[in-house]
Image (cartoon, rainbow, N blue to C red; front, side, top):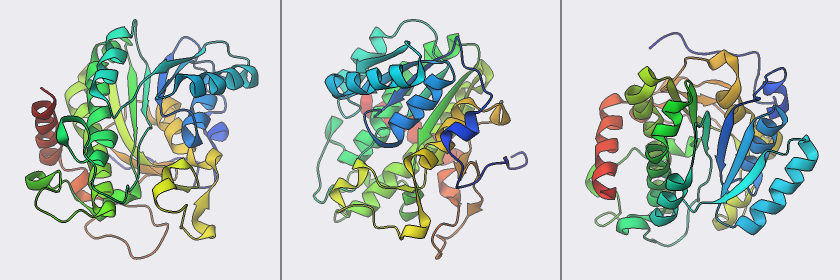
Length: 307
C-alpha cells in the first residue's frame, strides 16, 4: 500500500472546515440515513458546496422536513428525499431501479447498533449484519452503473471503531451456533463495512470509482438508542459537526483524490493494528478488516446470500 494519507485536519475539525473551498456544482450525491445525526450534517456540507443531494431515508415525511431545512440553510434547491430502507431488500431494489443518471458520491451512513436480543433481517441474516452491511452492499452494487457513469466517483462507508471487537466470522455469520452478543454482532457488521470498501475499490477503481471506510468518532445520536445513550467519556466525544468531518473529507476533498481501499479516523488514515488498543481514542484499524482475501470472500458470500 502507498504512504498513509495525512491531512491538515484532526479530530476537532468540522465538516465545514474540511470542505471549505471545495466546489461540488454539477455533482450528485446520495446520503443514507440522513434524517438525524451525522447523516444530516454530511448532507448539509455537501449541499452547501453545491452538490445535488438525495436524502435516502426510511421515512420520507421526516426526510422532507430535513430537506426543506437544508434547502433554506444552504440556499441549494437541489436537495431532495427518496425512500430507502436498507434493512429491506425490496426497498433497496426499488431505489436503485428508480435512480437515473450518474452518481458521483455515495455515502453509506445508515445503521443500527446493538439491539439487545437476536433479531433476523433480510434472508434470515442477523439484523445488524443485514442492515449495516448487506443492505449497503446491495445498494452499492445496484448503483454500480451510475457510479461508473460519473467518470470519477466516491463510495464512503461509515464503519466504526466497534469493528475492533470482531472479525467477520464466516462460519457463523448469523449466530446460529454462537450465543448472541450484541457488541460482537455489531463489531462483525462494522468489519464487514470496511471490507465492502476494500473490495469495491479493488473491483471498480479502474472505472474511476474509489471506495473508503471510516470511523466518525463518538457522537451522541439516535444510533445509541439500544445502549442507553453514548457512554464514551466526555473528553473523547465529538460534536455532530466534528463527527461528519471524515465522511465529508472522503466524499469531497481533493486530498484523497485517487485514494481507495482504506480506513480513516479523525480525518486521517488510521494505522493498522494486530490487537485492539487498550487506550480510548486511539485511531486504529484491524488488519483483518483490510485483508484482501477476507474482502473478496465476503463479497462472494453476500452475492450468494442475495442471489
